[in-house]
Length: 120
Image (tube, rainbow, N blue to C red):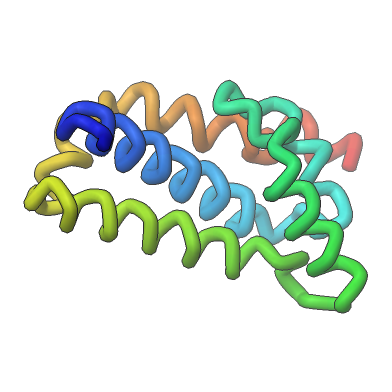
């Protein structure tokens, strides 16, 4: 059985994945076919995650407007809430303990920058 600290670490990781995938989805200038390219920049190594790759590929093949990213976002959000329930911790309390600078870095890793927009 996992310790409370291990469950909390998993909750924090899932929250970071949720933030990064959500930031990717909000890139309205980015075509879903390029999601995996941008996830290669992820310090969470989401570009190498086989489950995420397969879900996005299936979403693209199915013609989903969001390339399957919406279902991944919901899944990871659900994991966060489930882990927090297990350790009887409020999600907002857990989130406060994650560095705002780190969360901003995660968003920046998958965002289109103005200088990049000209190339896209």
